[in-house]
Length: 639
Image 1 (spheres, helix red, strand yellow):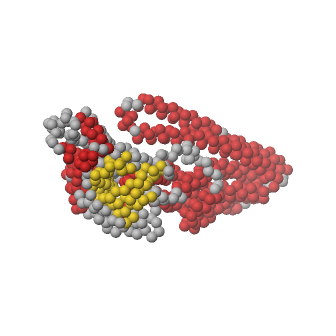
Image 2 (cartoon, helix red, strand yellow):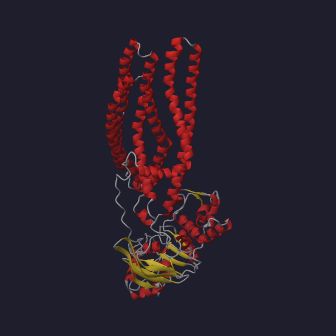
Image 3 (cartoon, one colour):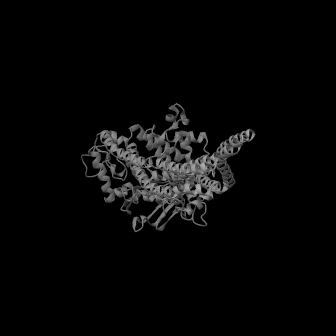
């Protein structure tokens, strides 16, 4: 594999809730997604006002019942007030139902649109972005951050607006009923504001620690799930459990600490509301005795004070959710604003059907500026030729594949296909005519049929079967309980390495690319599967210009060209026989491979994973044996 960019060190604060409680830039951008549903938002606002008004009407209706109906013995009025109270409760219930449904509908619609836009953008982002961004953090954007915005839209916005409306309504009603009593009641508000501010500041720090420790627990858990085979192979279960207990216990400690602090906030508010009620009873009771305040008004004051603290408590809780939404929105829009490094330039045209002539002209490429990994690469592949790329790890083999598919752009030089510079054509039309088969084939969820037709959605069943037969996979598929409709588990975990590789061959074959890029399979497989893979390779490469990161000697020997790479430069090129005759760098690689075979070791010096390859005699190795233990035939080095 070639030198890849170093991953960026993850800042543990990156995914913390560090945003402002209110960021007008985030709100403005979020409004773009809400704007199509502004009529629904208007209806939700109207319903919110109706809910608040109905709730505010309750204590005032009871005041009228006590001071007017009961005091005067007016039964019809008392009955009317009772019906009005029931009606206000029904209005509150109906409006709450309607508002909840509307806001949920709007929130889920925004969630759908935003996630769809993120998905489209993620598929367009260049490999350079994924080189520096962990998959878990990307998933966090798609799920946690978008959900935080959605929660704020569906419940937070209306709840905050409703709380503010109710607070203002209660203050106005109390001031209109009795100015002095209202002002006495509001004396506790500054104290409430101070307590809320202190709680909010400390709670933010405590829950930030909880989130940070929780991310450590999640990361350790994910690492052990991903590496469960290694864990069990080295019998590390007990030690890993001990370490997990440490981080998990620390997470529990911080959670309990945060919970202990938060648990005191509601009782403090309750105590303050009690003080306000006591002040009302003490001062208001005197006014009732003096005849300057009615009993109904006193009851209404007590009821309104009880309701006054509910939105205050709710608003203090909404602060954290609003802050999370702002921080989540900032990260979501940061992702959406990430530029696509590989884009079609203005005037890019569709690559016409090609024959497969590929030319690299003095190509220089670097992942990190100032650190080239390919230095002046020049090569030419004629239609139908097989070009083998060999060299130690880091020589630049995978980089040649990456830039040919234009996963990255080169720094200088040119790559042309049939005379078309790949930077002048659309990337989609380029990649439609270039097939890629990876060393570790990636299978997607779905059926075997779906995976074979992945690169050609309109492929018929006959084409799918023909492709499977061509790579000797048809009989195996037919032996499965559901044949081609058998579900492939995650990454094809129920299939063997050889079966997954053959399936990827069929997928590439049915797409019928004119240029094939092949990171040849090298995992240890049984002899029968080895022969099937080799036969499938021959079918797959037939008539196509093929670039092969070659691991098998049989593939290398059959190549029309062997490109020998070292530290990003081509140091040798030619056929297998020509390179051996020079007794240069390639000869050394080949001799080393042979020595490993003499010792019975599975090792690959041609740049791939370890594998067992057929022994071939070299001059100067009289002790070498052929495949059946007999002395090697003469001229074996000519392959």
